[in-house]
Figure (tube, rainbow, N blue to C red):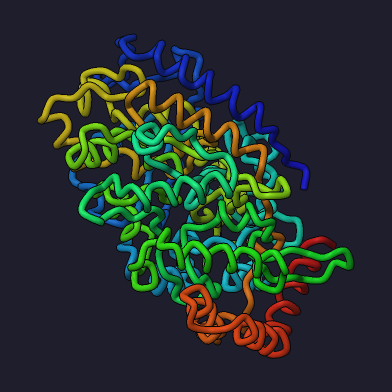
Length: 525
């Protein structure tokens, strides 16, 4: 893989982006049709190279809400003009996308398809069958796509070649990256923000003993139950604690290059014993086994009854803080960036770094492939970040200042109807994508936390691979999950847990590990 990207360069690009967007907030540059884009070539920014005729691109993508209006859509027209394309877009609701995509791949009706599931067995098999163009050589000269981190290319490539363009997201800081804790509760009891697992445990105990939520309603730590499909759990929203005990990120390779699953390690047993002890002391939400997802745990934190919650820095935004202040005007949130274990262990999950892959079917003429890549590269430019947030200045917003649109109610309604961002097909690399606050102080705190955790990523060598056996047997972890939960609740012995681990290791686990290792080794050749 020849495409490499240094994180420091990405950070520099983000700083430059902030400067550029601030500088174009009131420049008044107009297009030929009298409308004004947030940025254009006059500002020294990227614009798609002109040609005699626009390139028609038939693309299919997923939508999670209402699609944009198709009648005289001014946002679409503006992007088409600047990108020198004609977009024929098909927006498919998320619940129907899988079926529609399967048909589209074989029908040869599209120039560009979003593979929403990313690199899985189905995508890899399609690549090996010749369904998509090899894009490795096409992206070498791109300005924006080539900034995607090497780890993301590794997570999406097949046997060292690129058959699709990932839509980048942050490699660090998504999902369950860090512990959020009530800063005002810590202050109330003269406690520092915890840095270690033992300091966190002590803080949870203080919350339990003093009941800052009142009425016996305090939940020191809120987590949620595991369904036993992807792994045994027994709880979710616990990554920082797992890493503090030195547990691998789901899978690891031992010194002999053999797969080791997280729960097969001594470190996992130590983690479960910590959970059991914390549960026995009432430090963990008593509803945890029946909570179904992170949002249900988040609700308790936002409701002001939970003292700590594992999420990412997006949850310290002013929107969430306002919800908490409605319950307790003194509410404040602190972030435990990386939780340290008793032997110095700590980490954050190194995640896929993308959502979806843009693939070009092999039925598309080769002479058209570069034009499609160039348009994707154009949509990932700085000017189109502004466009996705403000649309066309003078139409969807009156100005764009400090990264935010200035809109009348009428302009906002039109922006929501025409949805400019839905036509910006490719994401721009942004290490601060999870920093979402509009309050400068909170935004800087979010960025600072992301800077810290970027130094502690723990990779899962099998992150981008899938096992056919695991897919066919979604209940493979169910019995193990149930007995682990019973162990934490004090209702089962460790011997019972070990029995299930051993049974899995000798059965489905052996096949799953073999399948994953074969895929991994094939990509190393």
